[in-house]
Length: 324
Image (cartoon, rainbow, N blue to C red; front, side, top):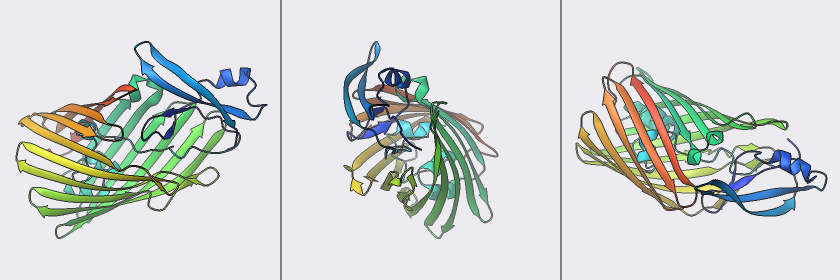
């Protein structure tokens, strides 16, 4: 991978996020390649669409931004609860959050998930997850894809979890591939490890380390790593409260700790309401869930102070009985 032109948008913590080569043709017309320069675009969402706030020129060098494969919510239920899921992770897509939670599945579960960041089809996530309990522990398979042909991130996840007394232990291997049209592709292997401790019947404590092996793309620049802790509490059968603390690290530098607070209220056995709050940046989330005969339809929405709304939708099917 050489001579990459990266268009970036500031999303979280003021850090840079790769999106796609939206203005690659414009850059070529300006002959910025020949000058050894590339533009960094800062933009925001308005009612009439995306507007360029400013363009600054930087020296061109072969690199990948460290926020490729940044952490995002890949569960509509989790989105509705602000992404506070480390202490719960009791469904198939939980393997993207805390793989130890797969042990809580009572039967196999298949989930399909999709989300468009800020309502833009170019920034679409497509996700498949499958969790299956066995006599020897629980296994999971997940796949996620972000972007389109010009810029695409793909992740294949294999997970396994088991239980020892009140302690659930799980891990994941992640094959990550980044492809950029006309510039080729690169890949990396990541590892996640998670724990879930059942302190009481209605109280869980979870912890997970993501990319603990320090995977890297391109010229060796590392991908984001994180350590997360979460509590999940059921004060009543109908009420679920979750709290997460997320410490993310990039190239050895720690970002501000992110707090996530979420709640779920079961209006009936078939309908749930969800709400959440997240810091860095401060955002609100919400969602609903419908479930009947092992089929679940979940919707989640997340606000962003500058970039607008992100909608998420998931369809899950329990192969034998309802897992939730």
